[in-house]
Image (cartoon, rainbow, N blue to C red; front, side):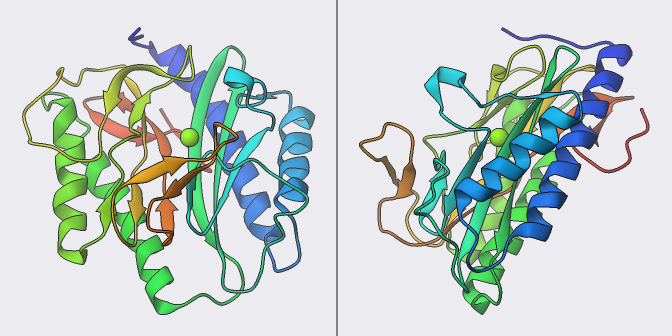
Length: 253
Ligand code: MG
């Protein structure tokens, strides 16, 4: 289902989005060698609840935690665990959903644990920049595939794998709304982008091949070649024709 939001709804989503942004900032400040992803989950869960919201992911499709915590070769949907203890040189992707006053927002970051390799640093940075390249195309008059095309064109020269089995999506009333937003493809395809759309744009970029596989737990999605993967996501609204990040520290819409 595709839901177009009015300005009031977008403002409410921006409130939830600010809380989500602050949750990610809190996690960033806590990430260090020795902390487990279960600890990170606890910190995020408590913070979201204490601020009058609910963690979207907890129980969603049976997911057992408030956040996804995906280390190194884990692309997405890593289940927080006491046995997943972060080490110097790891990268950790944290994906968080917040349900606030009836609306969901969704955002993810890949953080460095201590000092990481230059190769890992570049992967994380290229993933982040590819989000901005994609988002710049999320404007009235363009079509949905223009977003993924921009991501792909930006990433291509680096030789990284762009995950194709998972995509961005509409978000708000539900966690996953229409349309799907692939991170690759030809421009000028798919539905037109219109005022009031709220989109989770989320490139997932692999150091090596683009193939992924899902582990036996039914969630943990890893790179097929075991190499690193990065993730960068924000919830974006189309306001006055242009994209505005709602999962940010200070949003004026
Ligand atoms: Mg997400």
